[in-house]
Length: 133
Image 1 (cartoon, rainbow, N blue to C red):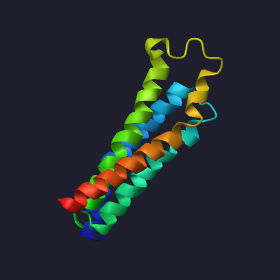
Image 2: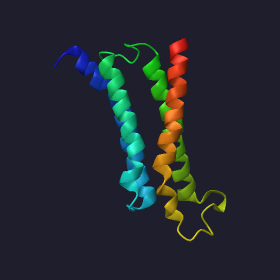
Image 3: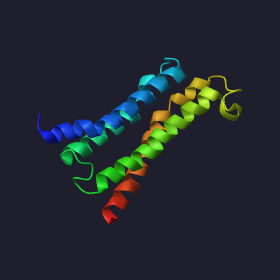
């Protein structure tokens, strides 16, 4: 295995471990419900984007410039952050948000669409900032 591939896998490891931890927690919060797999799509996109950035940069995050890494950070903050926040709010019933709702687990039905959309906007902002750096 070439050194750049070792660096790629080594530098991708924190992203993968964070994604696995979030996925396990999502499964725990949703109690294995029907929307667990659907809510892992934004996380899988984060790993995919990170893998592409490291592959194109030959094992270095900024190997191809600042656009892609800043775009990935711009994607991760709203996509992962919104997912984590809503799962947390559901798990502790934050401010009794889910008390009077008939089907409270339905919040997870469309959550991936919102998080991917917010992540896409964040990616675009990061991409633009990276172009100007």
